Image (cartoon, rainbow over the protein chains, first blue to last red):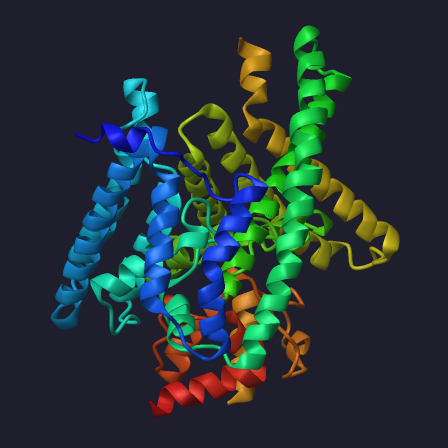
Length: 405
Length: 79
C-alpha cells in the first residue's frame, strides 16, 4: 500500500546546497508576513509538513511511520498528564508519566545491544523529540506550564528547523517566542544575524568540516589501520582530525538550524560557544552542545541534587556532587548509545568534572600563591583541549575497530 | 535582607562572606556559583524566607547577582 512513498525523492535536512534554495524560497512568504507583523501559522504548518515529509519519505518511509506513531503517543501522554496535573500532583503519577515518555527511546537504544538489530520504533531525531517531550512533562509537574494544547505541543516538538538534531528548545521559551511576533526592527536583526549564521554554517560544515571529515580523517584512519601499533602518530592524527570534524560538522549544522529558526521568527538557542577556548571542563560543558548539556543540568543534575539534599541522602557534600556528576555524565553516555565507548566517554567526563571541582577547591585553599597569568591560562586551555580531544577519540568508536577488530 | 542572602551564599559555596561584597557582581560568570551551589542557595532561601522556587523556574539570568536574588525573593514573598 505504501510502495509509492518509497519511490519518492528524499531530502535530508540541510544535506545539499540546493536544499537551502528550496527551503529559503518556501520560507520567503513567511518572512514577508513576519516583516509586516503577521505570523502565517497555517502556511508555516504546510511547509513544515512538506519538508518533514521529504526527510522521511523515500527509503526512510518506515521511519516516517514511526515518527507519526511517536508523536501521537507523546501528545496523548502530555495531554493526559497535563489534565491530571490540574487537579492532582502525586509523585508516583509523575514518575510514571516521565517513564512512559522515555520508554520509546529506551527501547530504541537498547535494541541494538539486546536484539542485535535496530528497533522499528526508531527514527532520525527521536532523541531530540524525547528531550522536548520529557522536559514538557517535568515542567508540567512543576506547575510551570499552565496552558497547552495538542496543536501547540506538536508545533513545538516538530519545529521543522530543529527536528532531526536540535538544538533542544524548551516549551515555555518556544511558546513565548511564538506568541509574540517580533517588531519590524527585531525581525530585521534576526534576519541579519540569521544570514551571518547561515554563511558561517556553510564555512563550518561544507568547507572546514568537509576537509576534516572527507580528506584528513580518512587519510589518518587508513594509515593508522595499516600499521596498528599502540600508541602511534597516526592515531594521534585520527584523534585531532575526528575532533575537529565533529565540531565543525555539528556546529555548522546547528548554525543552520538556528539561522532558519530566526528567519521563522523563533530564537532557537545556540548550541556552541567557542568550546575549544575553555579553561576547564566545567566551562567546556557551558560551551559545547549547550542545549543538551543544559538540559541534563536542569532536568537531571539540579533535580537530583535538590532531591538528595532535601531527603538528606548524603552526609558529605563532595560525595553528593561527585555522585551527581557521575550520574549526569553516565546517563549522557548511555543516551548516546549502549556501547563501551559512549559509556566510557560519559564516565571520563564525569570523572573530569569531579577532578575539576577538587582542583578548584585545592587551588583556592592550598595554592593561594599560584600566579594567574597568560601562561597559566594557556596551560589550562591546553590541558582541557587535549583531554576533550582524547575523549572524542573514544567517542568516535575508532578504537573499537583499531584495538579489537 | 542582603546580609542574610550573603550568609546563605557563603554557606552554599563554602566561601567567605567577603567574596560577596559586591552586590552587582555576576555570581555565575565569576565562578562563585555553580549548579551544585545553586541548589543549596535555593534551599537556603526556602528555609530563611519561606519562598518556594521550583528548579524549572530557575532562569540564571534572573538570579545572577545578589541584588537580583533580593528582588526575586521579595517578589516571591509578595506573590
